[in-house]
Image 1 (cartoon, rainbow, N blue to C red):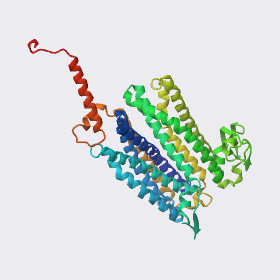
Image 2: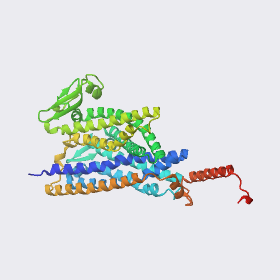
Image 3: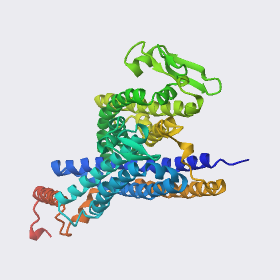
Image 4: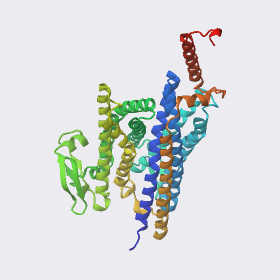
Length: 484
């Protein structure tokens, strides 16, 4: 069987980028949650906020490290597997990737050490500043990556000279038509992903009747976050869909399984099997006109279909169609969990309902799966173009021996499988160990000359302990010397 180097290179990049995106989708949201907890600790001096921050900072560090390691590979693959792409688009994408390193990675790396190891070494305000800086660094990193990818989806601000892209306006390159929608959609998705990771582990502790006060605080906060974030994400997704309809109609047609060159009264397909050979859908189950209402905000609005472009200009429709439904289905599931949590909270059953806690635990990795499905919609839906409607993916593949690409792909699968195994092992170990106890936190801080922000709490604990001891002593009968 002949091996196609283009297909193998695309599979290799898809595999490595899928592996990589798992970790930023967690760290962006988790850094934000840690900053919120630390800020609330400074504001309220509630020790459970400190406990949440100190526990989740370790999973954050491990996940951050995995993201760095897996992300480095991607930049090399541009040069090895898609060398012509770097040559054609280097003047545009090269600076954008450099900005990400200069403005985000250095910021994160510079303050990560203070965030992780500065609890007893720096003052409370400086430590909180370091945590905020790391959080902002993750956002800035997401900004530049989304800018680069969005330009490939909706390129603007360029001119082509001798077959190469040159920048005419950096403002148009950066703020291209799809960037604002895709950036907000991705950042909110990361927040939701981290929210359900924390909620899932908290629910697991409650099921096991371990670390109950800690778990209650984590679950309660995350369910409030989910109640706000999931409807917000649905609204952002609707705006993003309108933008895709305007700038990438073929992708939208693949997402919704729309085949006619133009179709009115579009149904919302709940189930279908898109058939690229017959250019139709098998086993359709849909709601009449609802697709038009969602996609055009008009009950009988018209939408461009797949037959408006030649077959060679269409993406893999089944993959795009089902990836989109996986993403949306998980999103509605999360929205339902947030609404159910509100109902149980009002009944005073949020922490005792085992079916609900089991469901939340089951949804621990669902945010990551939804992010992966969303990226498949974005990337597969753009095909066969690497720069939409301008450069085909098949035109920029490096002329490598297929056997060599197959070998590196196999090695990536083996090594990354080992890496994810190690990552899950250490995450399981941290979760099994649980959060630091209040006594442990106190022992770690007393006598260490910590100007850190836990010192006030430690003094408060010692004061309360002394008051309790004095009260007990006062209540005990006095023992006279002669009674001994």
